[in-house]
Image (cartoon, rainbow, N blue to C red; front, side, top):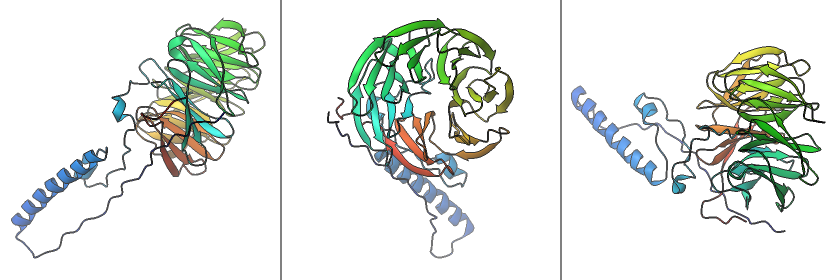
Length: 375
């Protein structure tokens, strides 16, 4: 099946330069007034020009004498202000890499979008259920959790054909695959639903902690992050039996397994909790400068999306923050494609690509143009 190709908007960083003034020497008082008037005029001109192209100048930085940081235009301006993704919803799993391309969940459009991992161009937008927020990959198919109609949609990753839509629990917000089954996290049902990958048959539903919002598979067991009860629940995949529950930080919202330990992102306590999977022992608590929203591992380092602080890179051995990189104002999801780190800024509707080696920004991509078609 041929996919719809949708053009993505291009991005251009706005660079600043030092402006000097030449002319005859004026009295100090005249010079001061000319400087003030000129500064006001320049600021007004810049503001007008910025408004015309959808940018907002950093006037605070300009007033302090610092070079303004580049700001990104909002791809969602035509649709009105977006809802706060953290007002009850955690979009920490709405971005993934399937081995070829990157997929993003677009809650407001009721679609998922496929982007080229080479340059970030949108390859297509595909209609799923209502309020898609979570994504999982089983090795062949993409599973989308549709929060608003209590279902999951299964798409063939090769051509985005919808294979089926299956009912689950209340407000499914995230999912994870163990290879044979998909585990769907039902936020309002305080449960997870287990579906067979091959045909979507529901094999069981299992109670966990309060307000579950994320899940991760460590190769042996399923771990569910419970935001309301400040805990993680460990389940056995074979029968869904709850093996144990362990306390973590305040309002945990995301988790990742680095091949040895589990890392839990705690949004309220601005921290990470490092857990040993064999016994759930808390090995360390790493304090952060801001609220973590999403987390991913590249096998060597842990990458964390922070509210209003961009992306930080953490060394797993001792929890030291070894890098801090700008990534927009509201990064809510992260994914790795092996060489590049992708972060989704949900509120503005764009993705930023960083080099996973040094955090260097490689590009910025917009999600689907509002008037573009959705298949």
